[in-house]
Each structure stands twice: as C-alpha cells, then as structure tokens.
Image (cartoon, rainbow, N blue to C red; front, side, top):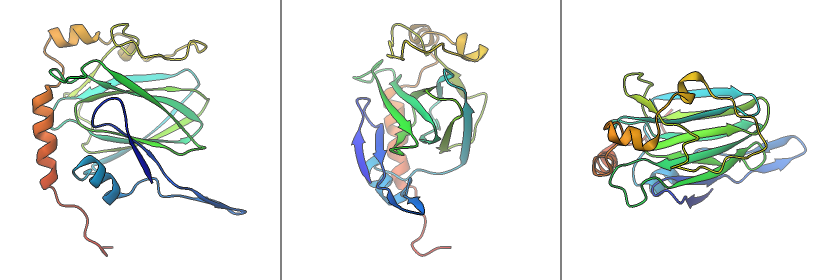
Amino acid sequence: MQIRPLAVPDALELTPQAYGDDRGLFLEWYRFEELTEAAGHPLRLAQANLSVSRRGTLRGLHYADVPPGQAKYVTCLRGAVLDAVVDIRVGSPTFGEWDVVRLDETDRRAIYLPEGLGHAFLALTDDATVSYLCSQVYSPTREHGLDPLDPEIGIAWPSDLELLLSPKDAAAPSLSQARADGLLPDYATCLAYVASLAQVSGPLEGSA
C-alpha cells in the first residue's frame, strides 16, 4: 500500500496494490498496522457507513466536536467521487487550507481524516457508492457542518456539474461564522487528543 500525506497535515491518501486475473481482482483496502504507523496511533473502529449518491450530489462539509471527534477512513466502492479535506482547526498553521483526491473504482484509493478536520465529497457519477470506517458512532449533538461552497475556503469543485445539496448542508454557516460562534475545533486540543490515542492497543495477532 502506498501512503501519501495530503496538503492538509495529518490527512493521508492510501493507494492499495490490486492483484487481478481472469477471475477479477483482489486488494487490501485497509491495513491496521500500516495506517497505525502512518498516523501514529490505531484507528478505533466504532461504526461503518455506506452512502449512494447521484451525480452532482455534494455531501458536507461535516465535522465533529473534539474530543472525541470522528476520524474517517473513506473509499469509493462504485463510480467516482471527488473527496475533500479541510483544515478547520483554529490555531493550525494551515487553517482554512484544503486538498482533494479522486476516489473511484479504478484506483481504489482511500483517504484517512483524523479528528478535527472537515470532510466533503462530490459524486462524479451516478450511484457513486462511498464507504466510511469511523472512530466514533454518530452523535447529532456533536456533529456540525460548514458551507461546502464557502468562497473563503474556495474548494475547486468541478464547474460542469449541477450541484445537489441537502437543505441542512445548503444552510450551513461559513468558516468565518462558525469560528466567530466558537463552533470549530481547537488545534491544540485536537493534537493532544490524537496524541492520547497512541496509548490505545490494537487487535492481537492471530486473534479470530
């Protein structure tokens, strides 16, 4: 598996090696020990999500209060999406910066987003099927959103698509408004919480 740091610190792109023959293909899209080494701590798996989206659907920007936040390991099982990660941690040297990765059924890439970052994706095809491994279960009282079209953030979404947002995402505040309202994660708090995760033990070798 090839692992590449993204422009947003602590976020990673992971590209698996696929083995194909006349029967099809096989790949490992998640490896506990490789992600642990790259991220510096294990990813605790608490929930797995699946979404199916029509072309032009824009989901996000979403994030959760830290602690505990919600780290995500995201891949596209069918079709293609443009996946975006945004540094929304107040006090971060790269606050407001973003990066995007195409996730699709060809390269089978994944993105890892640690706690405290914003996440969104745009479906580039119909029936774009995205799978998320999450470190925490969903909690509506800790979940928040930002305007994915906020010009202050300036994510370069494709201009040839008619975007479809949920009413909740369309009404989400701008980055500046969320910061003024004290809704964004704190950089130092995020770093301290993520550092504490290094003490979490992982699965035992040879366990069933």
